[in-house]
Amino acid sequence: MPVIPAGILPWLKWGVFALLLLGAAALSGALVNSHWKDKWLERNATDLRAQVRAAQADADNYATWAEKFAAVVGKSAANQKLRDSTYEKTLADYRAGNKRLREQFTCYRDMSQNAASGRPTDGARDCGLSDADVEFLIQTGREGNRLRDKVNELQDIIRAMQARKN
Image (cartoon, rainbow, N blue to C red):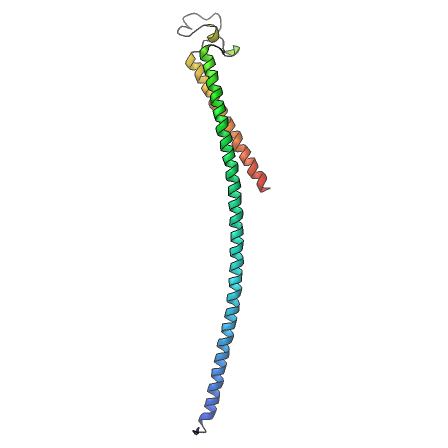
């Protein structure tokens, strides 16, 4: 058995004690670090699950609004087609002489023939307006009604969105 000199024994005891102390500190640091790492991973997982739920709710909300907007667009297209056919029929009836303008557009009876020259004066067109003027009025009414319907549709969408928020 080897002989250990007497002066080294206290140093050896303190060295082993220091190594044990450093080992215990390293081990406790690793355990504390592992504990906090687990806590952060758990918190991150919770946050990620919440984000997934929010994204799913947003996707459902977007799908609902996409369906609503598609329905509004479809309804708008159908209304536009109906309005177009109505105005085309009105214009065709006017051209055929089946429709007359309201009485408020009739000309004064004492207008000279020269003032009304170049304008048809038969029974259906007694107002003194040319065919182009009548077509312009009909087209302007058509556009005005289209814009009014579009504004009403947009107001309905806004009301629906506000009702959903409340």
